[in-house]
Each structure stands twice: as C-alpha cells, then as structure tokens.
Image 1 (cartoon, rainbow, N blue to C red):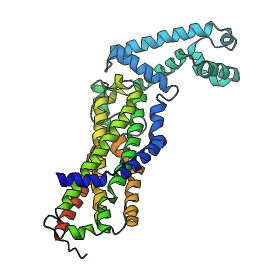
Image 2 (cartoon, rainbow, N blue to C red; image 1 turned 180 degrees about the vertical axis):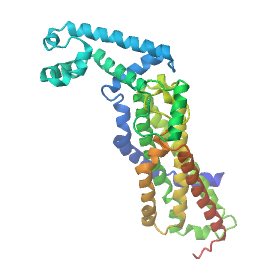
Image 3 (tube, one colour; image 1 turned 120 degrees about the horizontal axis):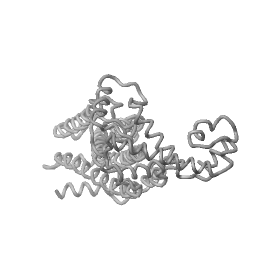
Image 4 (cartoon, rainbow, N blue to C red; image 1 turned 90 degrees about the vertical axis):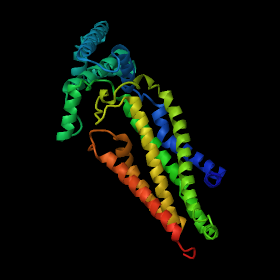
Length: 375
C-alpha cells in the first residue's frame, strides 16, 4: 500500500494540481459557468421553471387526467384575468384586441398590434401573459400525443405507447432537465481533459528517464508496473470525485431539488427507455462520468506505456478526445437512456470501451513481465 501511495504522490504533485486548477478555471468559464449563472435563462425558461414547481406542489410528481383537467381550468381562469387586463387598457380596445386569443393569434397582421404585444411581453414583462404562453405550450404538447423531433421506429413507438398506457406521458416543463444535460456534458468534458492531462505523462516520464531499467533489475521491479496502474486509477478516481463534488456544489445553486422526485418521462420531449426519477438520472450520469473517466485513464496509461515520446502521446490521444467531444458525450451522457438512441447502443459502447481499455492493460502487464530491459 505504501508503494501505491508513493506512486500516487508522483502523480498528484503540487505542480500538476496547480496546472489542473488553472485548466479547470478556464474550462469552467468557457463551458460550465453559463449553465449555473444564467439559469433559468430568460423567458420563457423562467416561467417554465416557476410553473413546474407550482405543478409539483399542486399535483405531485405525477398528473392524472383529472389533474390535467384542473390544469386546463386554471389556464382558462388565467385567460379571463388576461382579458380583464386587456379590456381595462383602452389602447388594446382601439387596436381591436379585447381578449387574450385575439392578442396571440392576430398579433402579426399589423404593426400596432405587434407593438402592443411587445409592450406586454418584453417591455413590461407581465408575468400573467408569460405564464399563459407556457401553460398553452404544455397543454398543446400533452394533447399532441406523438413523438416530436424524429420519426420513430417500431421499438420506439412501442415504448411511447407504453408510456401513454401507464400514464407517464405528462406535461411538466423541460427547462430543468435540459439545463442539467448541458451542465453534465460540459462537466464531463472538463473532467475528461483533467484526467487525461493528469495521467498521460505518468508512465512515459519514467520510461524516458530510463527508470524502468533500474526497477526491472530488482526482485519486485516488474510488479511495480501493476502498482503504477493501480496508483493511476486511484489518482484519477480521486480527482474525478473532487471535481464532481465541486461542480455539483455549484449546480445546487440552480435550485432544482423540487424536481428530484419527478420521473424523467414526465418532462415534455424527454422520452427514455427506463423510468428513473430526475435524482436517479443525476446519479446515473455521475456514474457514467466515473466510467468514462476511468476508461480514458486506462487508455492513457496504455498509450503512455508504448509510445516513444510526448509528441506521439499527444498525437494519439487528440483523435480519441476529439471523437468524444464530437459525438461521444452526446450519446454516452446526454442521451444515455433516451429513446432517440437504440436501447442496446449505450450499454454496448460502454462495454466495448471497457473491454478494450481493460484488455490493453492486461496485455501490457503480461508484456512487462517478459520485456527485455534492453528494448
């Protein structure tokens, strides 16, 4: 255990930790800060967030048809309030707008009505009209009862029909889960960069200094390679844990805890193969980041064990990271259980990456047991 700790100290040096701190500071401001500092991001996101909390307080985490009828009745009641507001202001009557429906359906046919609509929604930002817009959107989505955004195949349509029959196709605003998806992907990117930068030079540094030649002449020298691998995995796990704890302490400022008990399929436009709650979905994404981080830790150590210099090391890892940035995180995190991906795809990709990374390490450990130190 002491040897593992000594190897970890070679990885977690003050110089490396300071470098990671700077890298994370830069990536935080480039990728993560927006999802924290600007949530909810303007309107109607703010109104969706508020309305969602109101719905959870009134109806709980699942709405039945009777509660949906009550939601519609509240929409009609709010429309009456909007009508009274419009009728109390003569400039709307002069423009031929005497009720809410007239305001939203004929606003674009003349400039005067456009100006009045802009006055209510953007200049005065009257909450009642923004709330009505959001309620109307949620009702329309619920009533559509079809998959939006792509043409479903047979399995996807079957899953959708199951959700309809089980009453899990509901109308809660999606602003919270969309914000979390963007946040977790950017956190995943930041952690991936951190882990790769931390681990990549570790074994290669000893090889370029010819330290292995000295180690392998001792009785326990060759077993040190396994010790280094364990130290690398533990160090990466420690860094991932610290970074996740830090970034989620910032995410807590978004105030999404009222949504934790809500099923992910209750959010509009968010159909999944499974039925976790929002909190369970968060834990699933945290687990996924650990798996991705440890997979790339093993890949980084494998590459570091065979390449001749740092230039080659960087040249090999850049394409791997680029593929992850381009589409990997979108599939492995953002759409980890989404019906937009085949049900087998994400588990298959995780399994394949895990087998490749573990297989490489096993091969390299066996190779080290017989490698000639004159190589």
